Amino acid sequence: MRNNLWLFCLGLLSIASLQAQQSPTDSIYSFTIDEAIEFALENSYQSINARRDVAKAIKRKWETTADGLPQISGVVDYQNQLKQPVTPLPGELVGGEPGTFVPVVFGVKQQASATATLNQLIFDGSYLVGLEAAKSFLQFNNDSEEKVQLEVRKGVINAYGSVLVAQESVKILENNVAALEKNYQETKKIFENGLAEEEDVEQLQITLLQIQNQLSNAKRMEKIALQMFNLAIGVDVDSNTKLTDDLDSLTLKNMDQSVTTTPFIMENNVDYRLAYLLTEQRRLELKLEKSRALPKLSAFINYGTAAFDNDFVFLDSETPWFQSSILGASLEIPIFSSLRRSAKTQQAKIAFEQSNTEFIQAQQEIQLQYNSAISDYKLSIENYDTSKQNLGLAERIENKNQIKYSEGLATSFDLRQAQLQLYNTQQEVLQAMLDIINKKAELETILNTPKNNK
Image (cartoon, rainbow, N blue to C red; front, side):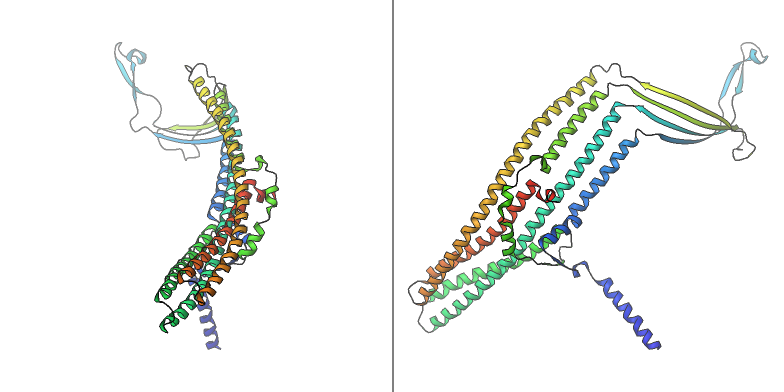
């Protein structure tokens, strides 16, 4: 029984040790593209810090609000006059000779006091503007977080598509290498039997070496693309991640051109809203400068107690403490600043006018971005259709040249050219598929369709 218990404990310790040694890269992640987007919006580094910015803005808003609420402060003071100051009094005041002075010490050697003061701001124009500015600042951070989410979404889509393209590129190149290897070995045997020229073997060898290099590079790029995807969604770059969507279905899904008929509402664009808030900030700065010409009214009330003695008796219950209280108000009225306030107000007014001009420019730029995104997306679909047709043609041309070469009707150089044309067209198709995915994401970001579809 003891042996069994001992073995059981050892087993638990072994499991705990293995779990402790498990690194973050041992975790296995599996994502569709929608799952990857949802995961990244919650866990990516940009999303996390964007939420923190909003949290800071909320605290900053309360900080501004608190300036107009009651403020209570307390002061505890203790003094011990090690050498008390001496005041000379005329001698005649104490019965001495006129013209002489008698040194006198006023007060006691030690004293202690405790005072609590409540301050309340009653009116301050800059405070009212500050409250409005804090609300605007919070809205700016909320919109900035939304922009980060849109950029994270777009980045994940781009990274996801890049991984799928890299994986598909590896598969295609592996098939090409296998076909070339077969052709090379067959031609080499024919040459060894004296039925082919050495140049035929060399031409095939050149192509084979070139495609092998491309395959090696494609495998490296596949690993880097996956690491970039991991970085985009917010996991360790070396994590074991699997993408469950395939490139063909993802491309077809993104070829739905209904997005091009979606009405473009400028106010839904997050860059538009951010540009407007910058204009609003300049307006508030102008309002703040104007408010500095208004009076400022505040009030306070305090309560204090103090004790005095030549010895330290402040902790004794018999020590008398003398209480005091003051109620007061303060009205600060700006009268004349040698036109300094006027100069600052005019500067703020000019900055506000500049921001209005920049806001008009921003609207034009956003409209241009939308027009360009529509054009680029349609072009990506057209390029994909063209590249698919070209791929079919290149495959037929390469196949014909294979037949002609085997029958001695085409040279190895002709075959090499047909093969390279086919391989380039294959890569063009992959790039066209990636462009469709990326251009669709860019257009959706400008339209803010992820936000509007919620």
